Figure 1 (cartoon, protein in one colour):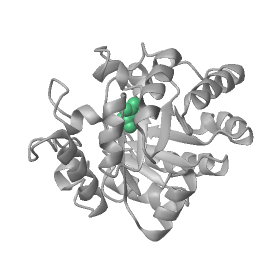
Figure 2 (tube, helix red, strand yellow; figure 1 turned 45 degrees about the vertical axis):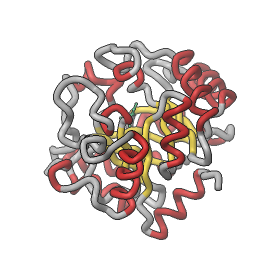
Figure 3 (cartoon, helix red, strand yellow; figure 1 turned 180 degrees about the vertical axis):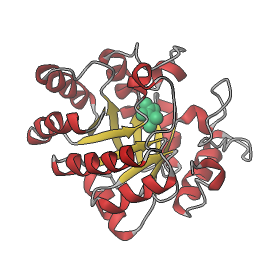
Figure 4 (cartoon, helix red, strand yellow; figure 1 turned 180 degrees about the horizontal axis):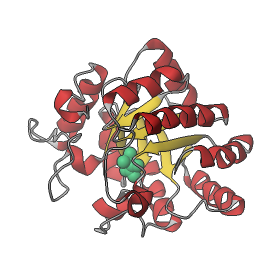
Length: 263
Ligand code: KIV
């Protein structure tokens, strides 16, 4: 069965926790969908894990389009989400043109990073038939402004603002919020205050879905992993079983565990 944005609203209302994974190529998409991954993201993390840059900033719209084409051929039923990369949605024209490019290549929804200021772009895209996921919390395209990859929303005033901005984006028509690196309590508050599904990465166990970067799941990315990362290949014999173990752990609410969360 092919997943659509409605599938995930249903999952939320039925309390089914869903598993999402980044994917950049054909074989990865085959393995992920065979393992039961419900949403594939062609993330601009490809700048780091595929291209070897130290951030996602150098990724271009052509790079994302290329990887969408690769993943699309291997996808068997998951919802295919693609990132609009850094500075590809800085004007109305750029937003529409670049979202159209990714949708024509096979993306079914686009993801943009930001808060309240995304409401207009969200409305613009949704009115023209392009579903939107708004990425909040730690937004890696703003790493230079944020001063590093840090937990966001620890300050109660900032947490309150984030809850209000998530609601604003839901009202503007977003189909998902993706929350990265926020305290568990904030992940829970945002998830409970919205009727659209919330996908978490380092946002605690209460979000409706969980996403991981494939290379983190496989322990492939060099350097010290973030707190929210679990290497599923460590306990499994091969890539296919590692991805299946991740999916099962999300479905059974065993991942993320306490040690992967921010207090
Ligand atoms: O680009 C990406 O892989 C992402 C994940 C961190 C969710 O946005």
